[in-house]
Image (tube, rainbow, N blue to C red; front, side, top):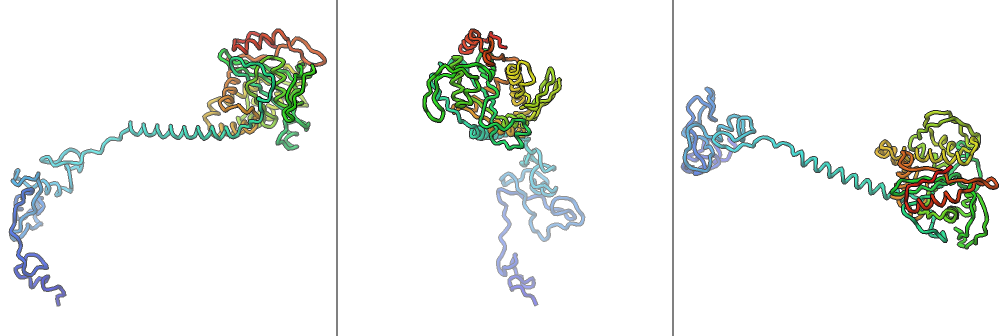
Length: 440
């Protein structure tokens, strides 16, 4: 039994043309203006335009599928239609390869894949890299700025001399044992003394006529001036008291030390930088050690120094012993200050090398170790700190001058400054002139 409805039955088609319509009559064939009919397919050829003995032609007067042209109603040539031709060869659009120039009789083709726009790619790559660099730099700046320990208020220093040309940094190495365990003190040969004293003091002048590094021996004989107590706020009058320079720091810290140096030299101190024992050693280790060339070897049981002559790389522990050694030399304090100058300049040079700055795995640990260890004045900026390190590097590279404060003799075991030479030196620094004075 046939389940199809009557209108769909093959047996009951009636005169209808299409299935599903029992009585409908087809419309007569019409030629539309936008198409034209191709040539009739001869018997024995494929109905799609390619010869083939097995493909039957369209039967019973059914018109061949029209082929599309340019919208005109008239025939534009002989042969099979363009649409049929393209389709028969397995193409939808274009030439036989599927791409390339226009097909036969102007049929539009897709054309070749456009070449990459390298200029545009390079432009956007550069913009992306620049954006990443700016964001990283800004983030690094705020991270580093937040780590600076701005603890010294130079505004409390009284009776200060006028500032001159250039910038003067007072760089202090203290014997602070802050954060150190007993094992650390033993390892670094620091002892376990209470309080803080200055092991080294230097003035770094940064100017347009070369940078100058002047070491101030800790045993320098100075007059303690009037000063304002850093914690009490009380003003203490001058009594003409003579002391070693490092006694000023021990008495009332950084502000009295700055006040004493300014009063005894007439040189204005713009910025203050201090580093303790452990911080110094950590910076050296973070940078991977500092290479030094020693003219002669020396030992010192007090500092733990044990060096041979020649070129060698000092780690943090060795570096601290090197800059603290004094008992191994006849002119103990003066030779130590020279060693300190030499080492700090070499350290600054090592920090400023491309292998450190361009390597984030080294740069950030070095910065972290340094910023965690430094105590600076409240007006110190990262730019000031960078300028100081760059100047230290310049002094080591021969672009500046390093010397000890000129000495004329001693009294009571203290070193006496040469007043005439000191005045000339200070005048040259205040006027940002090339230094002509030589030190001991």
